[in-house]
Length: 523
Figure 1 (cartoon, rainbow, N blue to C red):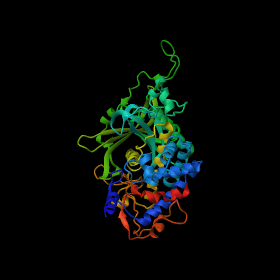
Figure 2 (figure 1 turned 120 degrees about the horizontal axis):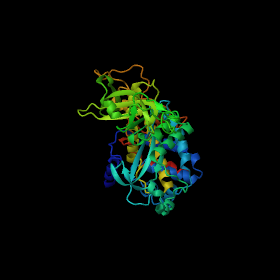
Figure 3 (figure 1 turned 180 degrees about the vertical axis):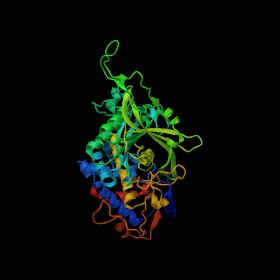
Figure 4 (figure 1 turned 30 degrees about the horizontal axis):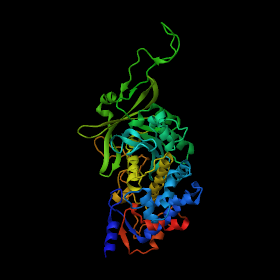
């Protein structure tokens, strides 16, 4: 009797994310999901040269999808395999020192993301995320700003690229930022201990972001049109110009003191002057106006310049703001730079908050599309939150350079699997909350809700969550055939099982023994 009671308590506890169970799973559903996970992991078998590597990758993936509160190696191995001799040490070696290539896994992973979520209107969002640490022996750890804590702290800092399209969102790539202190001679011993590459150069976060975008363009397996990021990266002219050279459109939040000209000023080219020595560099013409800060330009705009747009569909309803759009010439080394859009977003609060953006989108780009992309901050925040809350993204204990990248790559696989289940079963925000106005529809200044009919760019509503999986085998809707199987759908396999034993479980609480049943067979 006590065993049943304890089992009931375990099945009703919340997952690591803290979310309440919102889906109903039958035993047949769990078997079907196990089959899907097996097929999903086979997509990446070519990356692992040895059978043992494939096995430990699967063990790690199942551990990240389990209901464990702390998803570090030892608890995951004990929960999945029991006290198996040397298993913990084997998984630790697989993550920290395993001779499998993270770039190869990320490349294959991006191909899968492109196949499942790819859209020509896709958006790549880049953001940093901190991982607090107690000691000083983890690769790249330093006293720096940690977004997770909202203050300066001892942490590792990662730069992440996230993809969003009308189909969903997923991680794309990552870089570990190595603080400049690590390039001092005093850190050489730690450098070797953590296994940092001997030829690793110092790279700023904007440079790491540009490296990721450049690789995405070179590989060409994930279609995207836009790149967006916050003002920490947006204040880097080299990043903006680098993305422009790659032929992609950026929309970057920038500081309020970013300067520009409404009209491109004249410059004086190198050559002889009227008096004195000849000019060796171009310079602004003598009577050219000074560049103005964006906040001063916004303050001088008349009310007629502002238009009201719905720029985001949130969990509490539509998010609306006033927008103004101008063409400005940016400043580059005190001279006129590229001609870009300046976008101003003003909240509707009693004390309005102003945000400023610049974009290299062409002059013909519709204002409602610019307004819509301004609202695409939530996918990267949601993805990082789900990574840390659902699949143990920040639960790692490895200290090595290789281990950090291996763990993040495995985290990407786990998160994408949950996203894929949501897509296969068509459990999206419309099913949960009813129909909503597509993001990006313009609103009349006086009548909020009036839409532009010819808007073609629709993005995933921010109400979409991984915890909203529809896994009940009793639904009457027909599920689409998945990419994992050519012959069976998740729905048909689930319906072949018993329908009578249904219970409430979130997607992150997939039973460990069921998930590992095939793992032991394939070893």
